[in-house]
Image 1 (cartoon, rainbow, N blue to C red):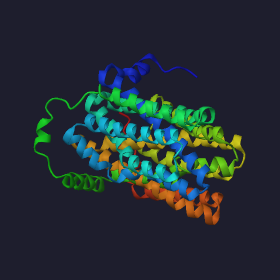
Image 2: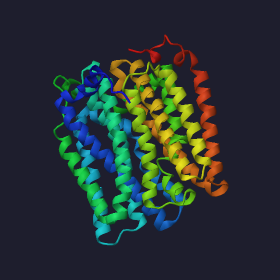
Image 3: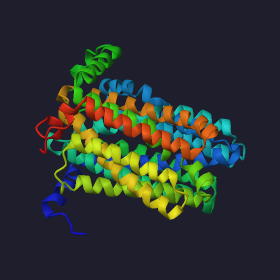
Image 4: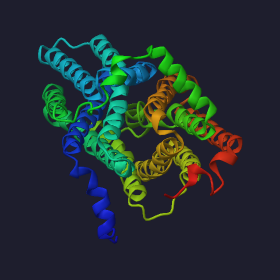
Length: 420
């Protein structure tokens, strides 16, 4: 594999010339790493103790409850400063992890403890990405914005890869208590690093002094998304893949590892790492800027390819083949989600980008919806049938979105497909 030219490598590293980003990057990395470890550790605990796939998917859905209120966190960030909100929420993650660690150490942990803690954390976690993007936008010059977002996405994929492997392997080797101690330390370190991220820039005090009602801001953002066709199309794709694609890798993996492939806890980490490794490879390919990708077209093609890869994965019972297909699913996922973000950023007016990205987080609500529906479907029809239904519906709806907004997403001349 040839290395990218020096100019491309310099462009990729340019965000690190900004002092704030040098602190935000490791803080975000540690937080993402802790998120991944926590989800797999507790997901395996729930499945092992209860033996219920329905309770597993309920647990998975709790992690995304806050997507409904994440736009309000965006408004709070505008009022009080995005760094302030980010530090506060990460301090809560740390406190909750420390509480669960104490319950494990005292040998009194039971499933309802996990559900309560997951419910509280789930109200906050989806807003973390909103604050990250807002801080990058706040601290980066316009010409560096997309590059910084690409670097952030690549490191998030790295966290998913190594966090997945470490999360299950550490529990298998040293037990749940020490593993959760590592999670707690990661959250604490992220809080400390976040304190050195740049706060509200000078000149932004007036907007905070005469705020509008939060509901007014949200109504304006919703109306803007609705009347801007490429943004609405991208939002629709985001909701679709969250509801029908992500449940397989962000909730059902413990069930797939245990019931489909009959592998242990370390095997669960291998499955998660295969998908994360593919996503990392995809992010590198997209971020390398070696391919003349048209964002609108690539988003649609990536969505369709993602569902095809998941359909093949759901029908195989051979672990080696499954790992290859999961890697492929992660790879094409990046060719869907990264161009999707590019479409929303390119088409939105600068004064609406923050609120539009806040509204984008509402699409995450498709994930708990898809997870909750998948449980009864698996119980009634089996995992293989559920996989076929989800992927076939995903392909049909992707085609419908492509047709409905064909004039906004397919022509080479539209803003969504601009190369610069």
